[in-house]
Amino acid sequence: MRIKRLRDYLMNNNVDAILISNISNVIYFSTFDSTNVHLFVTDKAQYLITDFRYQTAAQTLAHEFEIVISGENDSLSSIINKIASKAKLRTIALEGDYLSRNQWLHYERSLHSRLVDINIDPLRAIKDVKEVEVIKEAIRIAEEALAETLSYIQVGQSERDVAAYLEYQMLKRGASEKSFATIIASGSRGSLPHGVASDKLIQDNELITIDFGCRYQNYCSDITRTVAIGTIDPKLLKIYNTVLEANLIGIEALKHNTSGYEVDRIVRDFIYKEGYEGHFEHGLGHGIGIDIHEAPRLRNDMDHHLEPGNIVTVEPGIYVDGLGGIRIEDDVLITDDGIEVLTNFNKQLIYVGGKV
Image (cartoon, rainbow, N blue to C red; front, side, top):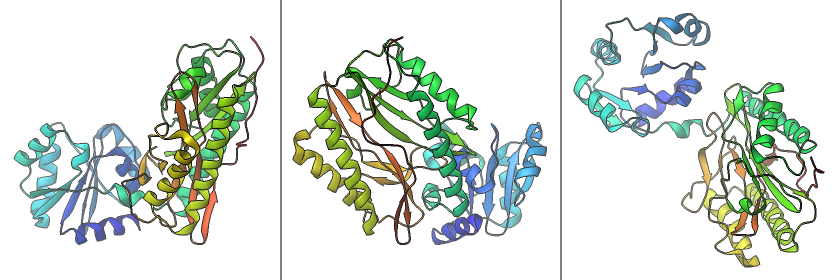
């Protein structure tokens, strides 16, 4: 089914074949992952090109593909040219977003067909039933790990300590790796939307933003919760309640067959109306899947309508330099008749920790 959709996409773009280099797209269409792999898909055949190190694994996993093993003297271009010549392929698409200028120029010199640039990433935006189930499992693992980690956090620990413990708990529960660099931003560092865990020690009377996720069977989860330790400044408590309400407003807005732009605008207007204009400058959310950031996007330059099968984050935040910040993030599936919120972790402010 995925290959058929890819072929239909190529036909609609008047392209005879595509050379797939982006590993996320390789995984999506073949389930195969390695350090040396390309897919070449024509209107009648599909090839997985790798070297002898991965021959057995490719034959085991990529059942729909003809496996081509490159020899010591075989270049990728020579293999493509042989296939293209035999199949009389006039136009070959490349994933220009994932090639350097030098790589593109190399293909222009070495491939005999006309080259065009194409982006097939949007084909991954609608998740099938199996993908949804895998992402749900990645979320479950992450949420269980967070629950364990909240009982571990104490005053005097470093943000890196907390991140390492959280990541270990995800691995222990079956994750293959973290989805991205874990964000643990405590105190005034909470004003950094991407405040990756540092050597800062967690202090009493601080908020701690925890933005994290794991990869399970090639698919990502992405969750943010902000928790408290000690007594919290009333200004921050007001911000917390504003962000929580913004999160709920955004989730509600997803129900109504709307666009990424409209959902972002609804939430942004609310946050600005509450007096925080200039303190929420990133997009409201993004798709998750094989990549941690993929289509569709919830932001002010995305006006396409969301579709059943999209899984998007809803992650409003407010960030105030010198004071701190709060972000609350959920993963939400768009369904035929509304939405399903896939994250289940408590969003009311949780108080954690004692002292080391």
